[in-house]
Structure formats: C-alpha cells, structure tokens
Length: 303
Image (cartoon, rainbow, N blue to C red; front, side, top):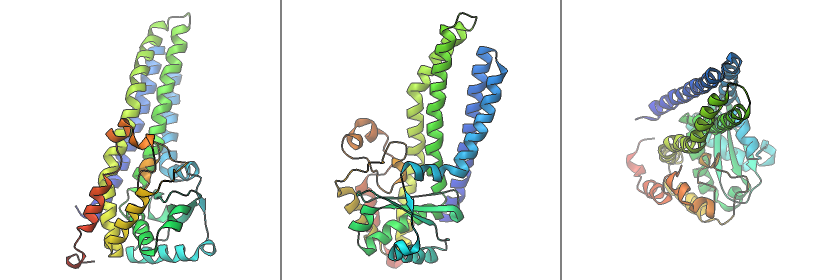
C-alpha cells in the first residue's frame, strides 16, 4: 500500500466511524423512545448525533489541544523550531501547521487536524530541551507524516467519539434508574434500560480501546517509516524514541483518552504497567519500532 492509498483509506475510515457513530446514537435514542413511548427522545438523539459528529470533525483538534493545555507559539518565540518545521514541510510538500508547546518536562509530541491545511503539531518543553537537532527532526517528521497520511484526524476524532460513548452509557443508567423508580407503567422499560446500561458500562470502555487499537499500531509504524524517508536519517528518530521512553518524568496532562495521540504512550508507572493497558496497547512495542527504523536501507530507497 502506498502513502497515497493509505491516506485515502484513512479518510474513508474517518467517514465510516462518523457514520457508524451517527447510526449508533440514533439507535440508542430509538430504543429509549420505544421503551418509554416518547418520540421526543428520538428527536433529541438525532440532534445530539448530528452535533456530536459535527463537533468531532471540525473541532476535535481544538478539544484535544485544550485537554493537553497546549499553547500556540509564534515564529519569534522559537525561530529554530519554526525553521526546522518549515524545512521539513517544504520537503514533504505540506503547508506549515500551527505549532503548539505543552509546558511539561516529559519529552513527547502529537499531531492533530482534519486536513493538512488545518493541522497542528504540539511538542512538550521537555522534548525541545532533551533532544538534539537530528532527533527533534525525526520526531517532527514523524508527526508531519501523520498529517500527510491523513490519520491525524482519525486519531483525534476517536477521542471525542469515545467520550460520547461514555456519556451515552451514563444516559442509559440515569433514564433506567429514574424510570424504574417511578410509579408509572415505565418500570419494565426502566429495568430493560438498566440492564442495557450495565452492559454498556462494561462494553463501552472496551469498544473505545479497541477502536484506538485498530487505528493506532499500524499508523505508528507507517509514520516512523514515512518520517525516516523524509529526513533520510532513521537513526535520528530511533535515538529520539529511546530518549523519550527512558525519560522518568510523568506527563501530568496524560490520560487514557488522549494517550494514543502521542509518539510514545505518555502514561508512566502503574498506568502504563497495568494489565489492562498492556492488553490494549495503542502503540507497537518500542523495540520493534526501533528495530524497523535501524533496519531501513536508505541507500536502496528512492526519495
């Protein structure tokens, strides 16, 4: 699969996830309205599905930046970083993304945006302080590859959709409990909704993690390879990955909803070592990524 066909595939996946999500929310609304005999709930569900899908597509990057407490910078704030990104964008044939800084000491980075014309790259202060120029180039090239491959939207939109699934789970619980405790004929419907709510409470986190797992592992290998082709120096990114993984600093703004966005999973300690996180790892094993980078034969690969 070429980078072009991968980009097209990611665009198609984005619309598929949005469509499935839209259908899912409407189905939930229909089920609740049917059991409680209230058409108003179905109308609310349709409006909610439309607004959530609209916001996910157009504003998912802004929401993720707000969660990460990232702040935009201008060229005069960090001319060296700007020149580095500009040069890589010229080489990649991409427009210059907005650059954000996260005031955290853990070295890490992520990209977001619905398309290359509305893309952002966010890096932590620790990344700028701990990596040398070729290592930083490797990381930025990796993130620009996410933008060029069109999976930046896919990886940010899943954050919003996963959150909405949790909200829908809570909705089942609240409506089910309220209906079951009422003194009208909706007690049976409330019991059914309560049972479905319990199932959703168990399945929703698993589904959200499986979605992230499905779109994350392969895209990291692809972005590593694309970034290495862009810089023509795979060792720079390999060294950067080693440095980032060995850094002991926690990322305070990290959480399970956004951890898959970063170049390396930012969760440290118990969060990263828990069995549930190992079971649903959104990043490929670091050793495999580094081995793949150091096994690239750049002399026999045409630019």
